[in-house]
Image (cartoon, rainbow, N blue to C red; front, side, top):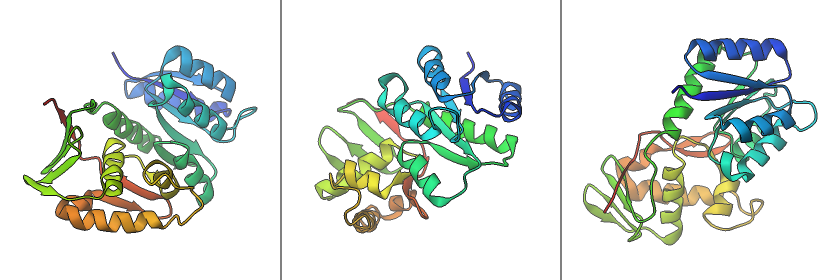
Length: 235
């Protein structure tokens, strides 16, 4: 069965254009024109990816995204922000709230379809269960033993470096804002020494060697672990 995509936009022409190209690519498409309907459709239809405009009547796209990430049934749903708002703070806010991608209007429908495909590839990668080993190329993360090896050699990491690595790999392909990493990895307030995370990333890259190059800097936003697909192996 093909993947279901929910398109949320209050401009009928944009909605029709996006829906046409997605349906032509083989996806099942539904639409919503406001935030309230979008949340209801997300709950009832369980779409695989939501294409979400920021400027909606009633609930804003930011509010819809925040609610989607709060709900268990949509916490891991792919979300691509599609908006006319190009300013860096808008992109940072959307990505920090949990968007998987951010595309500005005017846009190429063909590019949007490719971005949907990329998000779906990341979301359908093998899930990692607790107590399993996460393997990315020559690197193995043994979560049950809190141990990392590269080419069979153990890499000695601090607790913060290990947690940072696991967080980035588990969320591979998704941009993680510095403030978000501070809260989830270092358990610090997002407005305190945000650049502290940069030092941890530098040290982590150095310790991982060639694998460290998969930790990409996304200028103005934060970091992303490249979408080289990890695999999960049961012990």
